[in-house]
Image 1 (tube, chains in turn brown, cyan):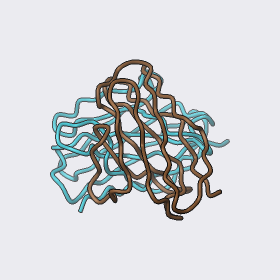
Image 2 (image 1 turned 60 degrees about the vertical axis):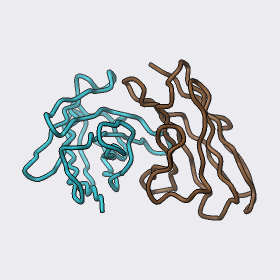
Image 3 (image 1 turned 90 degrees about the vertical axis):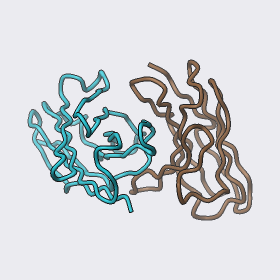
Amino acid sequence: DIQMTQSPSSLSASVGDRVTITCRASQGISNYLAWFQQKPGKAPKSLIYSASNLQSGVPSKFSGSGSGTDFTLTISSLQPEDFATYYCLQYKTYPITFGQGTRLEIE
Amino acid sequence: QVQLVQSGAEVKKPGASVKVSCKASGYSFTNYYMHWVRQAPGQGLEWMGIIDPSGGSTTYAQKFQVRVTMTRDTSTSTVYMELSSLTSEDTAVYYCARSSIVGGTSPGYWGQGTLVTVSS
């Protein structure tokens, strides 16, 4: 199975900050990488697929990059509604696997 | 708009089975794969498997291979996930999620989740 490792596991930031979350795959996955946001008690929300493509309706403050084994999610100009847990996922091969999550908290 | 509406919360005893439904609307049901993902309390997301609603073919995570069955009913645009031999470790919120694009396998649209509680 492909292991997905996110860093950091948690992150404190302030409103207006720009933050970057990293996801590393244990083997190359080309660009078969997606990012999700989840708020407490809610279903995950898809942000990005194919490493850098914004899901319909997702604001451009979210951006993704990377290919192969190393990927990043960048969130610019943090707003209160952006504080949540973020997950990456690889869908290059089965089983599809998630990262362990990055909890983004208000500083 | 794409909507995935899941069945309500369930309480089951150890050893029992549970069947969760996910009714899709707002798109062509047979054109998009459907995933099942679960989340135990306070834990991360865990992929269980995927079904192609067109032909009904499935791929399951090995962890669930012997206990899970995913099916679909094209007449009602509904997919089902049945999990058998439940233990307390199966207490979780179960989500269905439709792929983002035709032919793609990245989950793009999610149901609201179904809480399954396993308790004696």
